[in-house]
Amino acid sequence: MFRQVIRNTTTRRCYATKSKTTNLTTKPRVPFTETALSDGSIFVTREAPVSAQVQATTAPPLRSQPKRVTTKLTQEQIQEMRSLRQSDPTTWTRKKLADKFGCSELFVSISAPTVKRAVKVEVPPTSDAGYRKQLIRKNRERRRELW
Image (cartoon, rainbow, N blue to C red; front, side, top):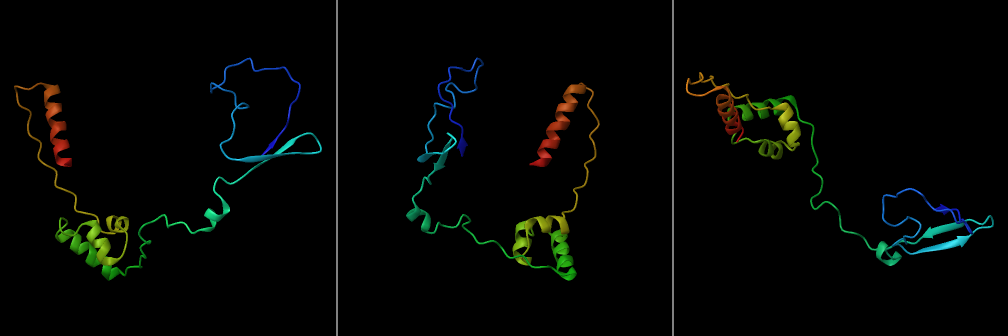
């Protein structure tokens, strides 16, 4: 980081800052060294917060499980996946099909989507309920379907 040094100045900010303290008074939490250059500026070098010995040790992997290797499926396998999904979608979930065919759940949802559920016949509004109450009932039934 390169910073100009301003000496013997009495000008101060006349406007409000976002922080309660100015940025010039805060000290970095990382150890640093300052080197004066020939033009009067200061060159700031920040040291690593972790020692070189600790950095040399190998860190544990970020992922606990290795990445799954996906294979390219043939048309026959995709057809089998679709038939299994359409025959019994509760048994053959996306996860089970993805594990069986060695692909991602997203690919299963794209290539073998579930059958759309049949639309229920609308119940005619009752005479004892007004428009608002009918709307509330209708929305409640829709929410129950989503469970």
